[in-house]
Image 1 (cartoon, rainbow, N blue to C red):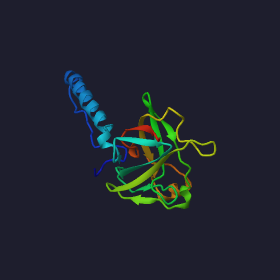
Image 2 (image 1 turned 60 degrees about the vertical axis):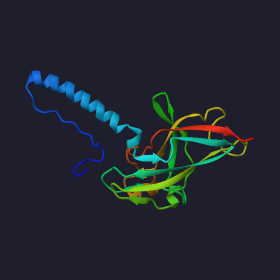
Image 3 (image 1 turned 180 degrees about the vertical axis):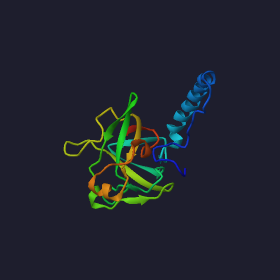
Image 4 (image 1 turned 90 degrees about the horizontal axis):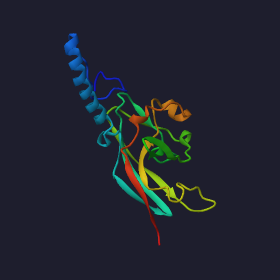
Length: 189
């Protein structure tokens, strides 16, 4: 990891200097190696945020806690934003076709709580709580019938402590995203 830039993956491939004929053959090998690196970089097992489960059931109505661990792979200190006194600030994203779209963004007063510094290579754990409420007065996490699907957590992780207090820039999305997990509901009787 030493000498790497924060945006570089552990898997890197370089093209040796070859003659034209060998270069064309080498490019094919390079493409195969690069494809393997791309699969490795997007593997759920290598996600920087790992949830403790791969499938969850949320009672309807009710709430669900999901524990997860963030490992700082940026190469420098990162700052995990807190939501009030809890940790971490987050967005829940749902897989819609091939895109991740926001499914739930909790109201959070992150400016009231100091961020948690996480040194490179270190891990911090946190728990998020999702609410599914059916009431005219209460906010609804999901619309009826739309809960089942594949989700991920996107933690609020900032590049410096000042940014976490001002809502400044966060680190790259893929460096603060969890592994995908399934979510479904179970109606209470």
